Length: 232
Length: 232
DNA sequence: GAGCTGACAAAGTTAAGAATTGTTAAGAAT
DNA sequence: ATTCTTAACAATTCTTAACTTTGTCAGCTC
Image 1 (cartoon, rainbow over the protein chains, first blue to last red):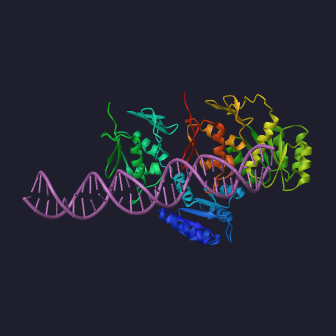
Image 2 (image 1 turned 45 degrees about the vertical axis):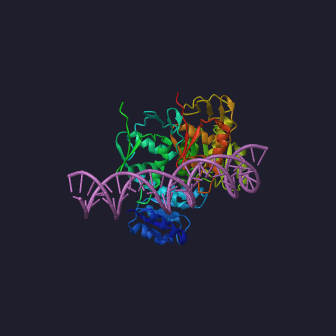
Image 3 (image 1 turned 90 degrees about the vertical axis):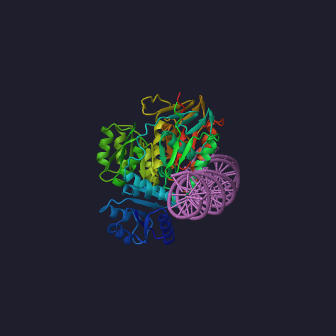
């Protein structure tokens, strides 16, 4: 579980972020001024630092500069809106990313994940020989336009629906695990009460039709889904 | 690809500019004092010089004066804010433009492009094999003049609209992230309440036409935009 | 052992709520 | 005077919540 240090003098914002990060399975710690922030960052066991530029005691850029002299822990800077100079300076000093205030918690999470991903070059979704088109029976996908049609008629899928179908069809004939599918398509793992994927699945199936007995997407309970490959 | 010489004693700013220029497909070189700057400018193969007025060894105006005695390479001066006198002097001495500090990188890029445009009035410019022109289906871009046409008819795009279209077309067939697009085109990252890009997008789409079902630019919700590449 | 039953967890469904993006027009900024 | 941004509202897409259905398994009965 990733430890995250938040350095920002706005205690309220800090708490909010901490709460949100917790709900996303991070372990946040809040510090309200630059000096002690730097201290904690250097001596603590953190995986990432979120650093506001405007700070009492010691300005965020200074903190970053000092921190960089002894550590290369990932840092995401929070900058005032439109403060282009600070933003660029920050990146130059070695910040891994920056986020203009005000930002949505969601955006922050996305950035954090992006930083970690960048740092851990996993081979997750490689290997795609990126075939621009996929066609099985009367369903045809065009990845270049992210559009799908059935017997020549557009299905009007949303982005998520298309992604689901794409993943399943790419693995037609083999089972795609639920969690894997969720990660690829929604960008997160499912919690026990997250029905989002089910809803998309339902909507997708509805659009695909095939109510007449022969299903296209079969559920493998406890495991995942299977795009039925009609051998021919 | 245009070679650009940056002469400024602020090494940090220099590096920043260089980085930014690189990302915009220029080839920057940094020099930190007037004397060697002049030397490089005269002997090097540069297409444009960015010259700070305040310099050690040899003041920027002197550099310009000397440079002009042997070359008419375009020069953009960087001046302290409100320093009207220097500005006028600079222009008098043959600078092509000037930019008061502090400035946004984006502003600088705009000036650079403007200078080149001014200098290359409808010249062949075919040397830009890099990507002077982009054409997909019936949409044609000319980056030198920053003009776009559809089936031979000018679309009358604004600078931002053109930039958006250019970025998307350069990556036709793959998704361009919203934030990335915003950074390249607006010079900033979007906050959750910044609708500017959306508005430009809307206006651009309107000018592009294609209301008849087949859209050119597709939205990938939560990710970005995709210029549809209709291979043929 | 075959068949039934209740309990429980996994997946499906529906509708309401939230978030993201689109659009229009007015206000700011070159 | 044009271009960009902001603001307000609309439309679309995604997520949440509450509830239903289905599948699986343990224990029971015969």
